[in-house]
Length: 239
Image (cartoon, rainbow, N blue to C red; front, side, top):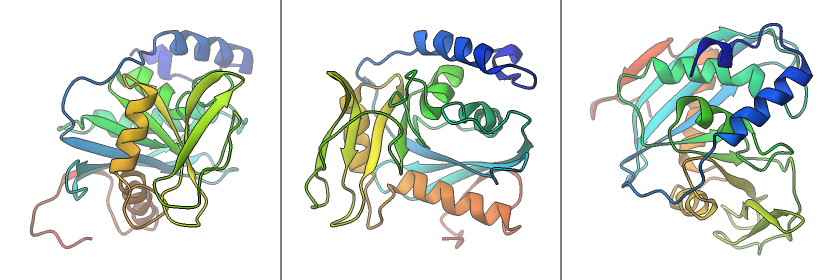
């Protein structure tokens, strides 16, 4: 990763498209071989018409799904709101949050899409290409592709495709509740991303990593948490 890959201040949409193609070509979607001990959730909070971004990455123990650490950053963006290019607004702040972590997670689940994107480079794939660690996307709404509705029962899933190309899976995380959209970002196979997401399902619609990231970022935005990287102890009673 270099400064050019993160400097989106004055780039045009055509330049952003070319950058997406370059980053997409760097992605690897082979099966994950190492054991996952920690997984992080990544999320941002911003107003569509504001240049202020609140970004957070929360690391969880993969087995217990209990928070271990969190990294929070307040940043600014000058890139316009353009569907399909939202990562150019959000990724720099997430990279900043990642870089200030003294202990890095094994995998990051991002609130957004991986390769389930018109140019196969949603925010999870974009972030994964820059930081070069395993990432997957977990989105609340479909951006791209077609699918048949999975069964209404928790843990049901169906393929998300563009024509015959498999992009990810539509996963039911709670009975009779809208599904989420799972796709790999980088250094994970499509099947890996599904298995990881299923492992992280709790009692809510959002899997625990992105749900916790959302909570922490909102607490940060409302002034209840401070900017920086913090490791939690067993005595912490924040959650």
